Length: 191
Length: 188
Image (cartoon, rainbow over all chains, first blue to last red; front, side):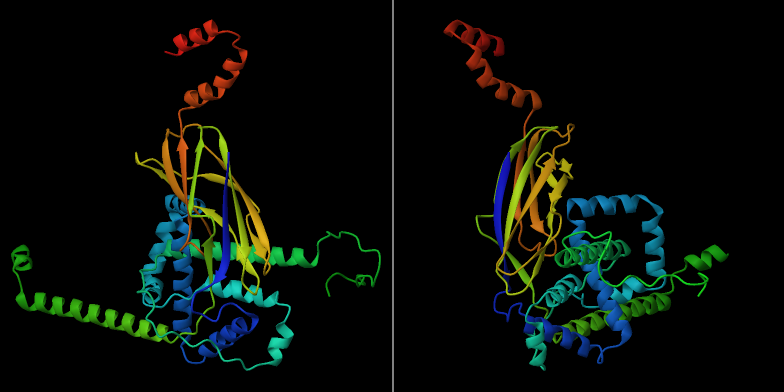
């Protein structure tokens, strides 16, 4: 039996949307913001962002299974002990979660944009103005939330880099018969 | 003596403890609110929304030990590349049984170019020990779980499903009305 579903990926309503210009402007403003906040704030926001992703992934079947397995080991209790003692969770729980997955996906889209050179020549591009609405209240960040989120994020990075590499090199090359040979090894191996 | 002095209530120390707890909580909540104010001025991150085209309800049937497939076609209507990775939520029956489905996603992850479409085939295996019932879960894309397809699977008794699948064969084999009446009697 086969069930069929169809869906589209669209821009968020009442926003500038995802274009090369808006992604580049968002990246620039994200980097510029780092000059106005402390390192601790930036790290807390990132940790909180990974934890938010972890909470979302934990709701899925694979995420729940991973979480359950880690909870059954000593990893969870030891991790939470360190988390509480050095007050990582306390700092991250008051921070606004950084949308780490969206930011990464936007950066990937920027790398694959065909009009990036033209858009760079148009710099500086004003970023989309913040709506001014207060973000969702912060949630308590636990070690397991962070760990699952960091795992999911890392998986996303690996998969995205693999997928981008496949775009550039569709045929696997083990032997190259043309072009410049690689530099041969001369003398001792300890150079 | 020492036990008696320890048990004696000291109103001043209680008051001090309550004051410290209150001040600590107040500082924590103030910091949280200030951080939220700071977040209101944070740069906007352009995002993506999953928009179902043919309704959000997916309904199917399966038997324990069997499998079923879900095909999910995703079209990117944005002007830049997107990423799509399907995920399945645990499925819960009204009896309280939770089923963590093991699924084979093909592909598990994909870059989707602008104005292009990708088709995901998700093959879900039903465990042989799964009790019959109606299981409800969700199918969505990682990072876009605000919108999801509601997936309902009716898992029937294995022998009931076998007898149902045998029905057409029996009819085909039966040459006269007597045999069909015998088979009905056997079933009853």
